[in-house]
Image (cartoon, rainbow, N blue to C red):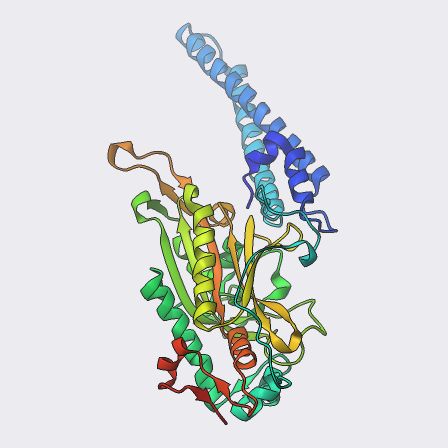
Length: 438
């Protein structure tokens, strides 16, 4: 959530920054904001006047009582002021809630240096690693190649409908091995703490990281039986990414500066309704309602978030390098960035049969945007030097999307006979096997 003081200081500048996102719909109803803000100022000014008048009357009443004078009229006026102040406080509370609700649907502001643009065509490449392989045979896509290895989209569709895949045998083991390699690399080499998280979370947790209220249609909602006494249940959701529970672990806390940075990772399934993606990537495992991901989250001092973004990008790159997969890193333009990000780096892996790079990781600096929603802060300094609490900065990134890594390994390392060469770093997780065969 944006700092409302930014809007109060220079609303036009905030609107100009939001317009850099190039989205057709307005993020902020400026006229309504001005109306609410004007009423808020008016009530606060009136309240200050009431307080001053009440203080003056209280002093005057005291003096009159000391002289034995009748204070009934002044007491009645004080009573009227108290009623007016109560009504003003109630209205002010409602106005603050309305302003807060408006801000919950306003995205983060792009940082300076983020390229302007409407869509992925304006993303800027930072670097590439590896060269796409020149095949001396016609490569098969991961669906055809994976079928003899146990990749079964039809079984997934039978069990749960479209955009679900069932894995069996060698390809299921490969899927597990990929996640283990990612977790071991991030925990043993990159300093993250491995976590196991709930896959179902409460609505306020999704508000903290920015999925609610704006993106409710992208979530899977959960209903369950009532507790004892048939008490109504709060709405809950399947997680779209473990960024949601991991980031919210500091919700409502005031951390000590010495606790930063906090670096967390988890391997979880992710559930997304893929609203608005009808007809896109319907074949295979590129775009699924359920997929696995190893997530990285960092909670850092504000001065260090820019460096942390580069560090996390490198951590995701290390996995692709271990898997011997060609990739490129791009910085997303303003129109392609996610809701909570102020700067985002995407890693795109080469998919031979599509003859293009496809996203496999998105690493975002959210600065204080999520922290403000979660009320996650830290206290600078220490001991007698401890200062006023400040908001932490949060970052998240895929390290990596396991299903897409499986797709990339199958397609890039396939052999003419239909087998798949196992990258050296992955072999210890597959019993030393150098090739996967049906």
